Length: 585
Image (cartoon, one colour):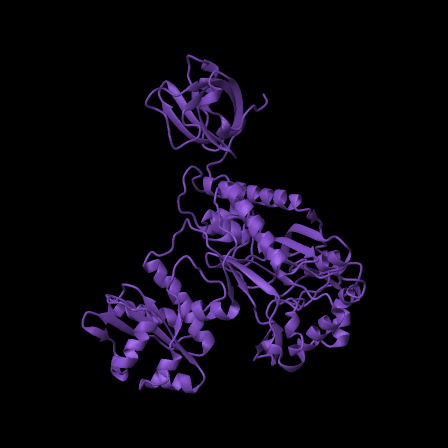
């Protein structure tokens, strides 16, 4: 028997048709004379009915069916009896009156329930991932992911982008994270690296004249894992020639608008808002702010420098800052709740919190006595305070203050229920510094990567004041998560050489690691730039998932382990000898 329909696709318009369905027994209900089965496949559920008066042989065989048995059924599509319609199911108006049944395979009792979203430990779910993927939520996530990627491909095809595959076995180059290394059997002592991104290859493709490239590509980074990070992840990677920032940004806005309309039915307004890196750090303390709510940070260092509160004065004298935020309507927080917020801030490096409540009796706080009335009024005005608010302050080094308050801002927004879960807010962050200074390593490091172009007018600063040079870089943020980032690339060998020099990569090392790129730049490299989206992260956000592990078919645990296959695992000594390797005990 051949399947004529997917289970979840049978509709009222099919009444009277004879259909053949194949799938898994999702749920079984025996009502004496009648046996009801919810049959499931990747498209959903449909109710099938075994009636001894319709076909006694099939009804008898249906008595053997249990959860997760694999079966084929044929029968007539009929309207459900009055009062039994299930409005929660797309197939809820019909049922299948079975005339034949074939049991294709039996099933052991699953280690957890498939037919309900009961709480199951993640390790158990990952060990039996093939069962976990049968559950509604994960199945729907993967189907949504497929439709999202399909819409991306459709859009890029209309814009004349070409899908070009780049190598997985490539050269180890410094890109910020540890490489996964692959030993070469044919070249003793030599190693390939799995790519952290296709960055160099897509630039080479621009030199080669493939002026619009894209790839939905696996990337690899050997770094500590978390809820939104995996050792292998997927990027939607794009590169274009003869473009500047505006060209890339406007096309990506158009693509996101198209894809969200196709997959979520969401209309987004373009152009997206933009902020400079400097502004976004001042207002939110983080370069990927959630702009679905306010609670913006305010710098009160100028006011704090004149108060008699010793903590504030010392921080200002040591070149630190004092910032605050207004927790609207939370003046009623208890001392214990404020202590909990203080401990939360300490988790991000802060020494403590200061606070001022705005009440009907005025300003209430242990530190209010150190302020004049004029200073208190100035602080309240800057933070737009009203009666019932509480003003929360952190005083420390700039990074500590921003980290602590940026995370407090999110925590307070959750408490105040300010975040609209069904809203999608985008933001471009622009004008990043080209370089940062690493105090531990005593050298400059690239804010994004070594191939990012400086602003044309800032190129002279590379000789005189490198930390003031701005990058032609841009990140796109959605609901407080960075979902993509890119830049216009350096296409001049001279500028690229200067960038390597600033990063402490001498000419010999640059030639050894990037010689092929430097040489390519001498053969008519066009101006080019692009962007890479983190596909896993975008799908996680759009499906409302807690972790990217819930939108990847076969993810790893936070320790980089696959419980289903037991990877990574030991290998035979013979394999190690062939690779010229020896494992130290």
